[in-house]
Length: 130
Image (tube, rainbow, N blue to C red; front, side, top):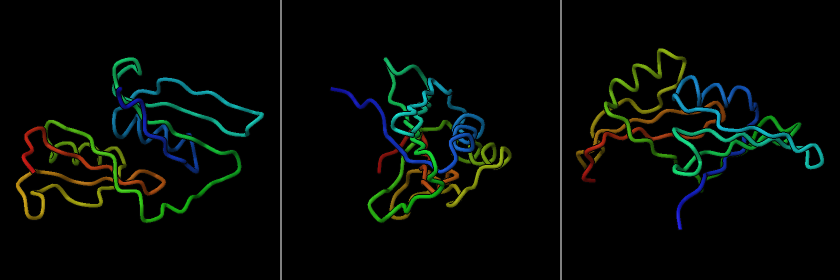
């Protein structure tokens, strides 16, 4: 078994694709409209779906906002340098919601960024022991 993808419902597909590709540096792997179901799926990631886990962005036509609820936590991305990644993300218009630094009660360096729909994305340094 392997993890294929994580699905997020988004309110503005083009804005979300721009965030994940232009701000976080992912690639748009595929996009398809489903007129009978009135939704569009777009898959983004750092590599092909055959060898990597990706994110499925689901846009339900006519729905521009979702309640995130209390069950969702975050998606985690490993970055070489959390401080530099935050600088780059901020320069590309991304919203940092937790500045880079050590984890509370731990030593891992981390930060959080928020996508256009409010989903949290954790940035983690490669050497984490917590």
